[in-house]
Image (cartoon, rainbow, N blue to C red; front, side):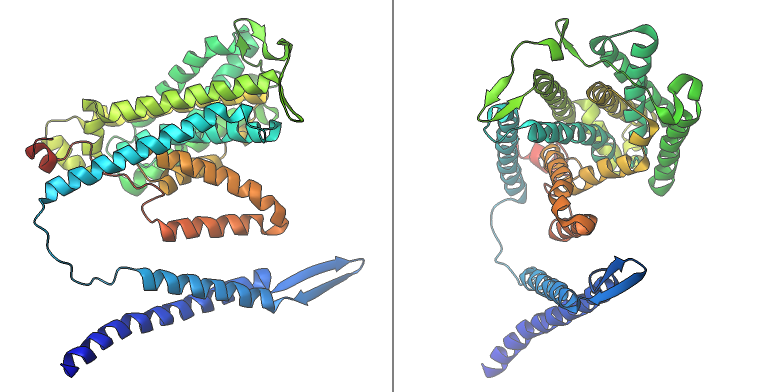
Length: 431
């Protein structure tokens, strides 16, 4: 009996010791990395530069890393044996999936209702509504890219190209032909989708890293064309005086009155821009949710899981890839058209690789294939830099630390959802 108790105590002691060692190593690395960033403050005066040591900041940061890493290691599942259950694995999986689906539906409905009522809340001033418009733009871009990355499993690093194509389609058509926003919106989506199909042809036989490199190159090609074709696109100077959307022929700035609450006044143009992008984002979300259950969406999931097996089932990977790129680009073009109408001015500097990286980060952090996760990640990646403005020089450092924390806490994304729409076991059990 004593031997058994000693074995059990040693079995628990080893993970705890290993947790302390991992936490100490992580704290040492954190101190090494934070020393040149937080450990010294540079004060410049006239003709002199002074270095002020701040080792207490390094010590505080290392302590936070130590405690955090220790907590992660201690609360990690220890792999202890569990009692076997008699319940069928297929039935358990089905019940868990239905419960998770209901939770996601409730959370998504709550977020949609909150967004719809946002302009009437007392705290919703012009800054808050404008920030919400930015969140919805990134959420719409994330949902469009999620079709390509999350459903079809095609890594796209040049998604900003379709965003730029949609914006410049509206800007050029309005500049040269005088077309309105509503006339250019479907045209912007069509031109962006055409560019998506054109991109799909060179990458039909590519996978993984090679696919990512080609899509990255396509995004840079579009940006360089917009930058150098000065006579047509305006070059680095961009295009000015892009018309704003109208409501039944009324200019938004000429609508009488405004929405007032407390001391905050929201201009009519801002309110209608908000509800316009909200409608476009919800349309994108509903399409993505619906297409998952259609044969096309299930074929994309099969392509994501195994392209060779997908081909063996009689599906055509060529058509699936082209449709994924085209439909994903379609919504990127819609978002770009709205962006141009909102800003009233666009230039190639608005469509750099950093935008593609941000949208891809939204999809990955939110959970590839998860609609509600993409929306939450969009809110997080837009709000965190804004909150970090108070930290001035450490704004991007705080933003990076928050992203690392999310990746460590939720490796599969905020709302991980990679489960196929139809499961073989669930189908056999009668679902």
